[in-house]
Length: 488
Image (cartoon, rainbow, N blue to C red; front, top):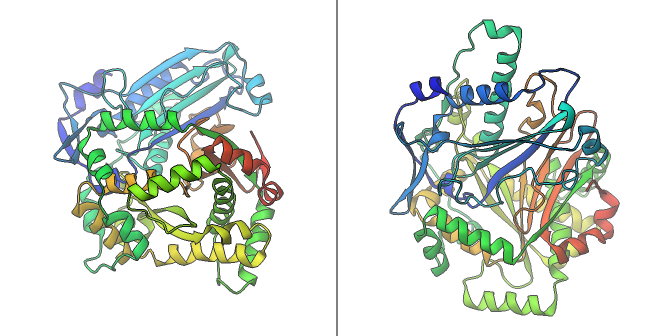
């Protein structure tokens, strides 16, 4: 701790629209580690010391989130640090029972997660930029390590970079290599690199994307006017009024290959990715579940539609596909070995009729059409198109709030993100890779995340977080049940 305090400098990081567009969400995962039989397994002193050593390379994480005139900043004041929340506790449950319970959320008597889905006030009434909870399992049999970071400061890529670096530092401090100095690694937090990586020529946004990023609303102005802490409180209340129900499903490699082959043989798309197929599957089952809502809920949706500027025409469904700008921006990719770890993702809307999505369950042609529509939209997101999104995000500092308001008032949607490519199972702290990585039991409504599977498994895990009535419909959905298996 003394070394960290000695070396940290006061500095201010200006945030941009890329940070704020997804700032309504946290990035929370729990990593389960099994003790291979070592008495010093992931000791408290080692984990904490390596965390502080890693924090030297990520000084931004000890800053305060500040908003001035709707523009955001992270202010690191060496005399008034906003230190990460770091907790540790002892569980009465042995690792073998957690493993026997397939790492389900109720395998431990108390939740490992210490936050909600939405960034909100921490212990000192500020939003913490890292939350860590170390739960030591009985008889030193294992560790459940919870790590959360809000989207204000990183995206999923940046989150994984931080946890992997912590694991690397921990391994160095534990092993014989500790005798040799581990050079401090350079990470880039200056948001200007994203701006500078954008091409000067930009393509105009299509109609759906334009409505999402350029339309304004009264609710959006209100959300933008709030402080991040107040906005977090409001959104947390909203999640309690419409609680989500979460489940994890497995989609095998064989299933993905079969569905990809069907789509490519249909002639509607020359190629589709695994993510295109998974997005089509997710969109189908969530759209059908949302369509099955009660008459009261349909009346509520109609009322919301009449009072707001709807993103969708009636009887349409929105799949908001989260895309990473990094691989589309050559200048950003050329920054290696320094890595930019700030926000660099946004959502692109794919709109289909609800009828076509429901029909995709029983028609190969309709399913192929849905998957190819995802591929078609994602293919349009070039560097010049990203430059157009960048212009929309940063021209109006309140853009993120108007987009959030549209999302809140559009119940016929699903947000789909893919976190399977970030190497989360590579987070080896020197005692073996995690045996299981889990999201929170409940997250935002109408949210789906494609997750990696552990060693010796194929395919993907899909985490769905939806309202209970939607989840009940998904669990009885014949198409979904045929192509997936419920994990828990």
